[in-house]
Length: 282
Image (cartoon, rainbow, N blue to C red; front, top):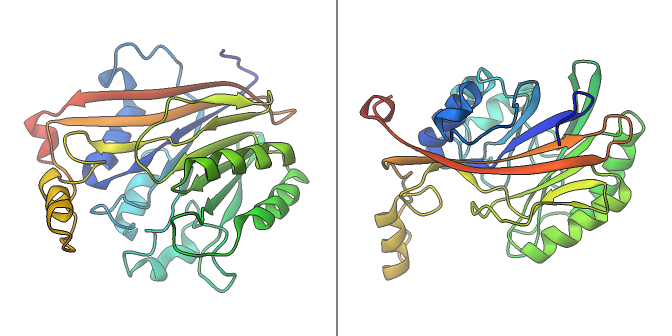
């Protein structure tokens, strides 16, 4: 369903390294380069990307933050790897588009939610981190509930990136947030796009995991050989970003009624392109 009266949210799964950054850049310029079958108008979308793996697969440098901003991205979400580049502490307070998970302690730098101006509309975005099979953090349940209620005083359009491992935790948390007033809920972290996109209770656009953007030839964006070595030896070999001949885009488009804040349509994209030598050398 396409309607000029709806707000379109285009959410990209975790960007992994340079292949992922360039793929998102090029997709925003010309999506049919990745798939001629894309018949959805992607103009005038509010664009969100998860960037916690955008710089060499771990964290986000200030250079890459600025680079991604220039692609036409409106908001960047993250997760547990956002702190992997030490320089994050030098610029996160001034990075107006960047969110870190809201359930880190209040003393932690950065912000976990923001309300963005988008034309005549206001769009609230919340980033939260799961706790099942993850490093222990404050519980997101009451924190996010309070934040949704706060944002709803200003706008009914509320987007959540829930960076979590367990599918059950994502599904349950999404239903909980839908009851409170969430417009769209995107799961991230596992880098494997799920085929369960839906609209919960005719209100909330949902997918368990949006997937990732990056090289398709490795293991969830990372080099196959180093991934294999870790499994075979159990030794802590450093992961390297994959550089293959094929790059993929995983993204989800949700359309939202700006009056009610309810999702009215959801569509996921899983597409790829063969990389030319020119692109791979950039």
